[in-house]
Amino acid sequence: MIPKPAASGQTMIEFKDVHKWYGDYHALRGISATIRAGEFFSLLGPSGCGKTTLLRTIAGFEGISEGVVLIDGKDATDIPPNKRPTNMVFQSYAIFPHLTVAQNVGFGLRKQRLAKADLDARVAEALEMVGLKGYGARAAHALSGGQRQRVALARALILKPKVLLLDEPLSALDKKMREQMQVELIKLQRQVGITFILVTHDQEEALVMSDRIAVMFEGEIAQLSDAETLYRRPNSRRVADFIGTMNFLPAEVISETAGSIEVEAQGFGRIHVDPKQAASEAPGKSASIGFRPETLTILHEGQQATDREVGAVIEEVVYYGDMTYYDVKIDGTQKMVRLSMRNVFGRPVLDRGARTRIAWSPGALVLFR
Amino acid sequence: MKGGWFKLYALAYLVFLYAPIVLLPMFAFNDATVIAFPLNGFTTKWFSEMWVAPGLWPALKNSMIIAISTAVIATALGIFAARASTRYKFPGKAGIMGLIMLPLVLPEIIVAVSLLVVLLGIGVPLSIFTVILGHVLMTTPFTIAILSSAFQSLDRSLEEAAYDLGETPVSAFRLVILPLVMPGIISSLLISFTISLDEFIIAFFLGGTQVTLPVYIFSQFRFPQSVPVIMALGTILVALSILLLSIAEYFRRRGIAKSGGKDTGGFL
Image 1 (cartoon, rainbow over the protein chains, first blue to last red):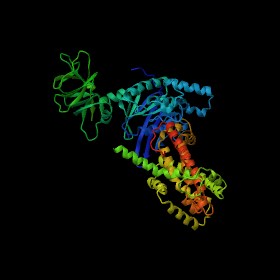
Image 2 (image 1 turned 60 degrees about the horizontal axis):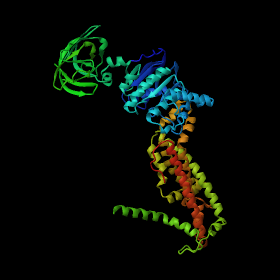
Image 3 (image 1 turned 90 degrees about the vertical axis):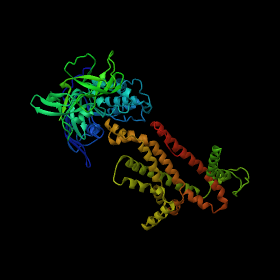
Image 4 (image 1 turned 45 degrees about the vertical axis):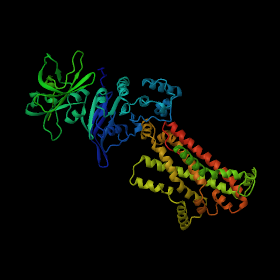
């Protein structure tokens, strides 16, 4: 990972118990969170979870029914969008089709009444920043999807906002382009040092790009943490299901002390779990143990487990080139679980029906109860 | 041969549509007062007679005042209605829009008679003004239809983006929305102008002593000797109508090309 410059730690955006009602529909249900100056922050969740609404309350396009949104320490309630130190990249990019690229990018500078030379210099600088040097004279509607997005970025960044809001900016691009833009956006954010707030439904995108992520469900923030914590230690079954793949096996809590929880887990036997690795189970369900596909290792012949091992049968093999997914049944369990193995050179892909041994350690397991 | 029959049908259809209109200039340049074949020789005297025909110029002046006023008022109303219907949600929207569009299918004579009854009932004297009123009622559905499609094709975030970039709602509308719907506005002006210019029934019922061009033309048919003059006038009107519609279509297409959209429908 490329080291990120530490966010200054100052608060840029603060939500204090924010509620939003559309008639009877409770879109935001008591959002309280702070976003730090200079961080790349993501709002992640399925469609209809309120993430875009929350972003639009920062931009000023949505009023809030209750609570306070503070931008750079100031109550933003009565500040209209055109007076806020925020700029937005819209999902549709909202490029003005009747203007040229340069006119689009310079649109926000109109109010500043710059001399033509200064304006041209600022526009050229912004275009260069997003890799569109020399595109100024082109008609905006003749651009490709990726280029439109860059124009939208340049147009928002030219005003040097304190916060850049990105509403699903990559969802309209194809996979290759999306991955390329992810990296470019990270670099751009580091270069300009502006707080970026990204709305996305793509968990991978959020994990790749963000310093911190707020996972939202039904108008509430379910978990707010850095990408690794979110992935390794989801605080609920819902978050675990939404972020990546997680396997679940039935378990039973035996006893609990301050430093450790004793669990009888199917397939793994009696183990001790750190309370930090404990999360809440979906309502109405009994406890279970969860683990990510890559945290367990299928041992090849003669290889010794570093911690513990358990026997298993391979039921299905899905070959992806760099990776192979194995659906296996661990001895003593009924449910299939999915494991992923990197296809290291010299290591054969296993066959269906093969018996194998799996290395595991209690640290990789998350307890849901 | 299936394709042959379709071609024949298409040809017959076009002849049916345009043959009468082709006859118009033919007799306008024919050197005879009787409208009948064979043609008698070429002349432009009907056009010069038209120039000095009594009552024609006042009628043309009335028609122009009515058509221009109608175009401006109906387009202005159309802008409000189109923006409201594409931008806002309000209770009973479908019903209200339906009622606004209804004059499009109502028999014109019913509208004219009921307007006449109402206007006489409340004691409004018949004049150019009452004709404008009737024409606005008739043409507003057309302007709404044209302008709705212009407003509908706009991405709502365009306005928000302008707002976000420092503009006020008013300047955002002026800088972004207006230029993008301008071709629609021009097209709406031209089409409502054309409809009003050749509208007869309402002008006849609500005009009182004020005569418009179509009413004048109708009245002249009582005098056989002025029929060739009417043919000449009709020729000029047809040419003007085609010109206006072509300009309207040109602006509509240019608007689509400018915003990079795809052409779907249109009048020509």
